[in-house]
Length: 315
Image (cartoon, rainbow, N blue to C red; front, side, top):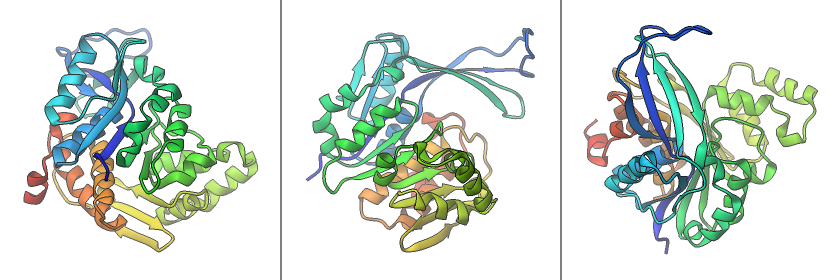
């Protein structure tokens, strides 16, 4: 019996957002809107999204002992996330500095802060939390060696979900644990173009990218060959693609009028991870996750846009 449907191991940031008429050029100063501060970070976003849907959710992360850390803790607790695994101290809370122009395009600079101090030792100390979770989800806004330690502490029979963002080469040990590996187009191409965690030559990596071309089915096939048990490729307005040993299947997008896509990928990942743990097939979980993401993009912001299960049903 698992205590948690989902444990998210990952980042928690304060998003500092300023609207600008245009983003400044080098050496230029521009005036912007009033500063808006929102709770964010891929790990914190996923935890809130899952808890809003009704999943028994816990978060393993590190925050600073500061006002931004308290903002993030309050957001998690308000959503119903168990914060027993949230560590405090070691560095200031991570911050994302975001400028947004009238078209919605943004520029982001991230100071990882305490996220970069979430260590393998922290995972080992929280091994009981990891092993009490039916599904464990991670991203790459924390050190890669910490993600490796998560994989090594999984309970027999539990499931590991990884969104490799920001993308980088992944060790075989992590790839083999992924069920699924969830990537968008950019992340898929970076991982396929990388030298396979040091095991492929530059020529082999280039050959993989050429073979993949612009067909998501080929990206999925090549990614599966790297070791994951399953792969999900998100395609924005074109939906998603799921792939495993059983084959490849397209999942249709839900047509909505998008207002703000911030955090939509995090809500998709959280919903998919939860539904997989509840026994849904990969295609069923991805279809539900697409509905969750569709609701989220009709609202502004990240965590504040994530729907409840009833709102997803209403869609």
